[in-house]
Length: 308
Image (tube, rainbow, N blue to C red; front, side):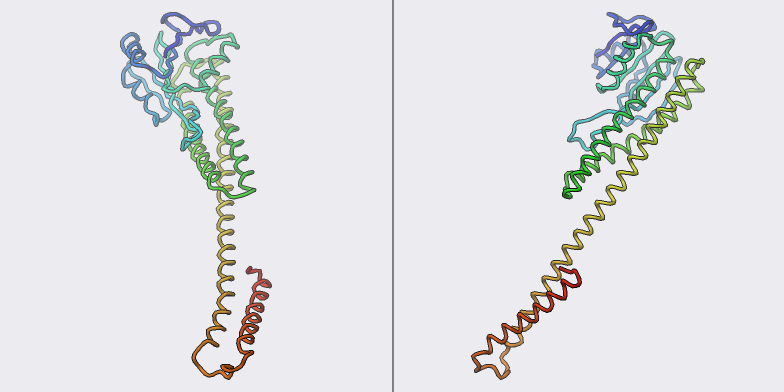
């Protein structure tokens, strides 16, 4: 699906493509690909690179065309191995062409359009447009990080009551998501530092870049903090599980030892040997009393040692 936006004063949709408009392509169909390649002359390998979900954040120049790939946050299905991940957003620029291509529909781009419409100022040029996308991505990283932190706190509350495998698996998935976030944010920061020297920047762009740097630094530091907290949490619950297992094994071992003494005493008196009690009526009772006393003594001893 493609949408044409007039960016002079706010965002207004256009029926057809016009020079210097913003072409927003989301989940491109074959018709969209043909339009970009044949109508606008976009190099086909640009679109192939954007379609690669593992493509790193980078920029490329080719015969007047500029390709910028920005990693943005994306939420998958809840049951996914990594519910929070990152995807590439392609920005393609030329003299009269400004295009964004994303193979997924994201809340970030919906919010970006809505915010720019409320802002009502449009974009001064393509450079201003690019850095505002950088700023929006940093803001959305922070939003997603807050959601991840909420899920971590909820899982920790559940684990405080009982250690459940499902909660541990969810924490592991969030740990993977934070790894993706950290890698993508660092890649975006490196890309931003390079673009500052490659794109024509005026004074207004410099102020905007400073805002982007602040938001990206905050997103990176927040990711690092949540990662450390989650790593510490996982280590703590791993220690709790090991401690619980050790306690259980200690109790089972103590019970096995206690049950061994009745077996030992009765086995000794049950041998086919002369012990002087073969013809005594009280022999069986004496064995029972002796067995109970020995067992009780060892139970008291184990309780004193806190083994049971």
